[in-house]
View (tube, rainbow, N blue to C red):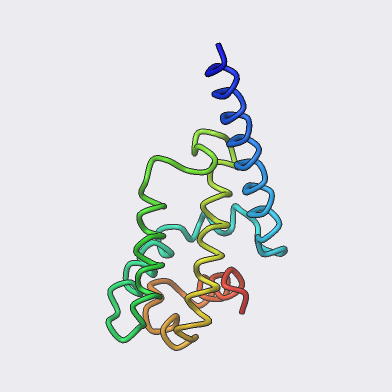
Length: 132
């Protein structure tokens, strides 16, 4: 029965680690960006990330982050399952925001403008999402 106690301790530790990560992600979100606003842009954001990831003029590390982000967005496994109302997609928005901040710092606004598939209002929201 000792293995049962160890299994419960490991599961409890993983649950606490998951909750701490969710709290950190929630605190890292852009303060003035609503989840609804970001979700409306999701199709354009996915196209933007795909286009930036394929841009050979960007550093390899930036492109790798973008491919990993695409994999995370397409994966059925999330930090918060998508079946949970609002919060299920909120983690995706926060992860996208964190990666975009990193990418825009490295690639610059010109790459963002060059590959943005949507309109100017959407680009303004993406800039806010990226911390610009």
